[in-house]
Length: 615
Image 1 (cartoon, one colour):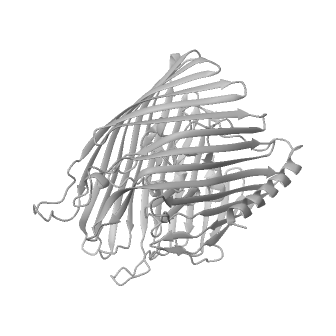
Image 2: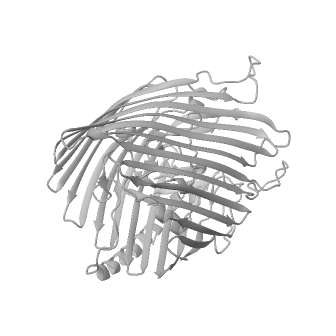
Image 3: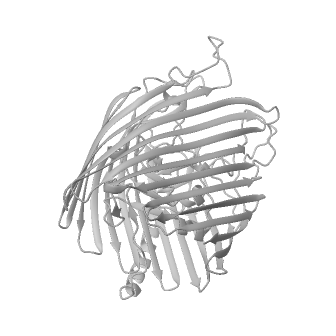
């Protein structure tokens, strides 16, 4: 029996057992509300998509210090890093590439326009109020990058009681982490203020130290969050959010001895809106994000290269609620990207410093979405047209329909187009870029079923995603790496469930994904085809403890299959009183020796302890 069928059968049997014991119990699971899927507030059960929500309480209970660990606990996502703390995080959502998951902070993009990656390794979970993950294409709403899914991080959440908080954490590799802040809602003001810092010696990232990189690769990061929203008279409001992280990490390079990377991530947004109880509401967001990365040789303290993206954007959303069953969203979305770079070498032909042949572009989009509620049937229709100065016009459409069999069961089916704009590297990288490279396009088909009971719920989704013009970097006959358009077929299934039975909590998910190059008949690199997570928790008065078990299947890399592996973590929390909690965690309990990226080490068994205060 294959992994998918074996896993699904086991979870189905567990679900049936839970159903037997759960029906007469009082409701103990709070249903989450999401806005990322359709730009309007909906419960996760009502949404015609597969969604997950990570909130502050879950992160604190499981003692998760970085978003790589948090995302790995979700179905449909495979996360890799080339080294330890602070190294770039690659997120493969439903088998798509790491640049094909749109990432937002309070609605604002923060990816690098040069390489297409988002610096989520710089986001401290302590400064986030919640994270929403929507699987599947959402380009009809968001445009470029939203092929595999959308991840949105929120720095504040309305309706929360005022709370002051702080944490101090110490662990393996001489890792120290501290954070403090205040968040909540007072009268008509919602606010979130916080600071966080982490310092770690790290471990030796690269296996081969022939080039002199036989050292630990440390990481430091300092972050600041400021978010405030003021409700005004007459349905108006105005808000400001600012998030900034400054980090430095050593890393092992194949080409430079003892290199170091300095990174600066900044996202600032000013918003204003009007909401009425009748037909119309509107919101305007003005934002700027900055992603800056500078590499240098630590032995000589000489900068070797730097890359910077500055993105300015304006977003105007208008909602027309014609009646209880008809909602129309119409919006304008504009952003301008400017890049600056020093490649650290001169052009072979001109002798001048190498640079991009083009350093800025702009994108203007108009989109509309119609949501209909027809008794037990829901219909979502969306369309968006993007006009980009680099590659022209791109139109994306989507259609989804859902049917509620009862208050317990709900099914949906959807078809959605997606696309991703070529990065500046793919278009204009000196000596490698191809200004004629085509935007990546996709057609995603999905069918899903959701169920909610009094104290447990589950969701399952099967999908097929065909990506044409996928951009892959492949060496040419001379050994120079260049971007090429290829076609990829991806199919898979996601299953997740959670339950609370008295003092026990149980959550689990299973993922199977099969991404294949259509022309070559080869598996797409670096993706694990199978993944399974189980989280068991038990509360005893002022003590709660639990086990996190994860299985990752084989993945292909550099023409060979990396072996599968399993990881086990244990955690415990002890509430001294209503204000102070002591916590401890052991990760990779069995000290598993595993490989995610060929040539790079992974962390062995680690321990950490922390104290959390709130008042």
